[in-house]
Amino acid sequence: MREKEFNIIGLSHNQTSIGSFVVVLSEKDGEEKIPIIVKSSDATNITYAINDDEIKKSSIYDLVRSMTKHFLITLQKIEIYDVIEGIFYVKLKFINEDEEIYLDCSIGDALVLSAVYSMSIIVSKKVSDDYAIILNEDGSVEIPKKEPTEVLEESIEQLEALIKEALVCEEYEKAAKLRDEIEVLKGNG
Image (cartoon, rainbow, N blue to C red; front, top):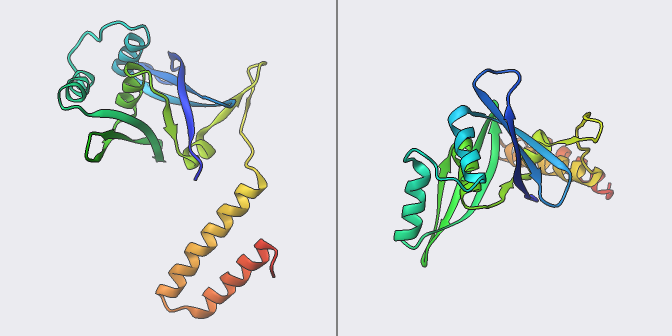
């Protein structure tokens, strides 16, 4: 799966929900955008971090900054890897001399850490395919089109997963039919 790099480019009031804000991520080497709704306190902290102001209240960001400084740990990657029922799932990758450590994190905290550390956010292909938009100059919104080869690869991957399930359930005829479908998609059948 191809991941994409995104950076925070904007923050504004959410027109549909009082007390929340929309953070807009922009693809580093492309035109896709991902809007993410965050709570007011996260928006405030993101604004402070973007403007290089000190975050007023002691928080998780201070803890992460202290841990990375005192324990010689580096925050290497912030990744949005999934969205389930509108909730963005994020993991942080830390490294030290000997190991990699992955920790789950809320989207709000991840966005603040991205701003504090001036880091891009890595977004999985699945998330960008499902949530990215393109904002045109006239203000209209487009949904990016998947490349035909990407759709074909996803179809083949899904069929292969179904084959595995069929084999586990000892449904050999079904597995054979699925195998034949894959061959047709690949142009071999």
